[in-house]
Every structure is written in C-alpha cells, then in structure tokens.
Length: 273
Image 1 (cartoon, rainbow, N blue to C red):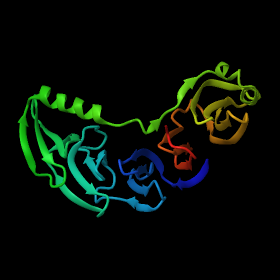
Image 2: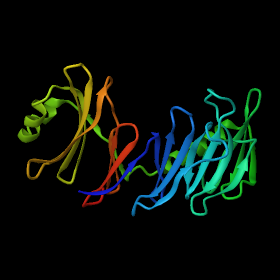
Image 3: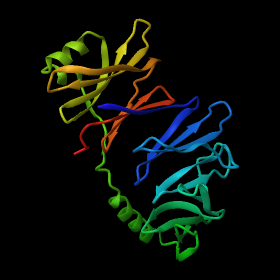
Image 4: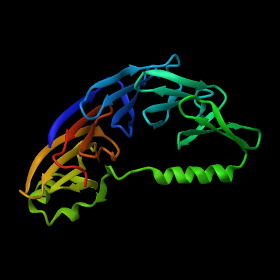
C-alpha cells in the first residue's frame, strides 16, 4: 500500500464520481458564496485535467451523470428547489460544451442515447437524444412504462464490481484478532465499526467518545498476516454525530476521506479481485 496522491481544497467536497476511463470528478461548494466548482483528475497518474472549473452559472448547477467521458450537467429552475432543468453536455477531452438544451430535463443515458423529458401539466413527454449532438432521435411521448423499462435495463448494466464499500461490524466481531482487539479496547469505542477486508488487509473506521462528549473518527489499516497495524490516523475531530462512508476501494485504489475537503488516495499492491 503506497501513497498515490492527495487532494485538498478550501471548499467543501460535495460529490465524488469516477468515469469508466478512471477520471475522478469532484464537485466542491463554497458554503459562504454558494458557488460550485468542478475538478477532474486522471486517477491513474494524478494529472489534473480540470481545476476549479465553473460555468457562467456559478451556483445553481450540478452533475446528472458521466457517460463515455461526457459530463451531463443540470441547472435548477429556482433557488432552493430540488427540481432539475436543462441539459448541458460537457466533453472532458476537449473541455468544451458539446450541446445545451434549455427545454428538456435529463432522465438517464444508455446505448448512446440521452433519455429526457418535458414536464406537462399531468404527464411527462419523453425524448431520446444523440448523446454527442443533442439532436432528437425519437419522440417517445408519455409512455412512462416503456421508458422506465429502458431505465431498469440501463441500471442493470451498471458495473459496480470495481467498488468495495465497508460492511458494518460491532467491536465484538474483532475479539478473535488479539492485536486489533487489543488496540480497539484501549479506547472508548462507541457505535458500529465500518470494515473492508481484502488481500490480508483489514481497513476499519471507528469512533471514540472524548471527555467533552464529542466524537473522534479514526481510521486503521491492519495486517492480518503479520498481525500488526500498518497505518492509523484521525479523519475527523470534535464531531457530534457518527460519520459513515469515510473510505472505499475502487479497483486497486483506496480512497480515504478526511474532514470535509480532503481525499487521501493509496495504491494497493493487488487488484480488487
């Protein structure tokens, strides 16, 4: 397990997405100005492709999906409303907007088609668009059943086999591992423990209750083979609630999330499976 690269920002990390070609897409938001910024980093070599990228609309915009290195963005019709409107197709390679549709709303993308809709008084009216040009390929109408069937098929195609997310355990599950349990029992560990076990390594995140009743979120990497701790660090201090999803594995990369604005990325010696 070796350090690959670290990402730190002054702005809060809002979303983490990874494209099929291992482009790491990050969405950051400035909590004061409400502005949103987008980053794109090549996961394999750490090269920065986009840094603090913004559109003309700097606040009310977000990501719908990434498909074949095209990022599909949306805008919001009004402030403080969750509804999405418009489709902006942005090409990572050229760093240019390929097309922009002001009338349609993104639904999903599959088979080189963007499925979208216009919201009528009672029904949605669906269209399929060419994902590269935005041109209408088919007017599907208000047949919701047909479109949802296509969406279900698209969802089933998504490949999650490259990801490993933590399982929830209790401290009693670690008693049989004397070195690890000895370490955990030193501290007032509270709540559940998140764990990934892979290739003789065990990655765990847990919380310690401090004297002032706040929580400290810790991360530990334990070597099952040699029965020793390879890494330990604090991810969050002075928190009042239990924090989950503070780490995951993608292919042979370990992502560790620290605070609200930092990612530590490690390269594992072996692939995911």
